[in-house]
Length: 225
Ligand SMILES: C[S@@+](CC[C@H](N)C(=O)[O-])C[C@H]1O[C@@H](n2cnc3c(N)ncnc32)[C@H](O)[C@@H]1O
Image (cartoon, rainbow, N blue to C red; front, side, top):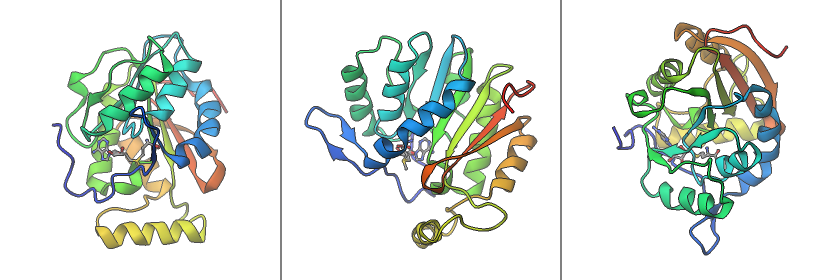
């Protein structure tokens, strides 16, 4: 359960060591504020938010500090990520930021989790995994969420079969050169997989740098239009 799937050739994020165990990823700093503003409308009052593929741990440290009534559970499939996540956790000093867990989001993962997960946050994973693995992530999220919970997915996607910029097309090509099975997913394919897993697609947010946020809900009418 805790080993990296072999089809994932790119494990990022790349970042700068800060001397105290924290890794600082430039992309997380650049894109973080827009994600934190967007996610706020979907957060549960209380309970747990699970973050998949936490990477450096920067996003969840920021979010836990902003929303102290929620328990924030970081996770990643790579053992070495735990050091940076723990260091960001210590730096944040937020009691509601739980110790990170090793979790393969593409595997059979939901059984080890609490039963009050009102939102699952995931940034920048779908383009580095295969379609089969992505289906597993979506099914796992649908299983793990409580009724009325949200799956909040941030990252780069194709829309209508088109890349949203030249640099997206280039990045996708660089990923598929490393492994043919990975690369950008189509928005429409994501929506179809979410529906197949029993999630209701409820919102699409345009984000800076041509990224998107896809929001799907488990068994609820959308709160936001
Ligand atoms: C591009 S980084 C994104 C990190 C962070 N979410 C962010 O946006 O800054 C991708 C992350 O996905 C993690 N990852 C890759 N495959 C995974 C899997 N099967 N389950 C959980 N995490 C995975 C990697 O270890 C890495 O931390």
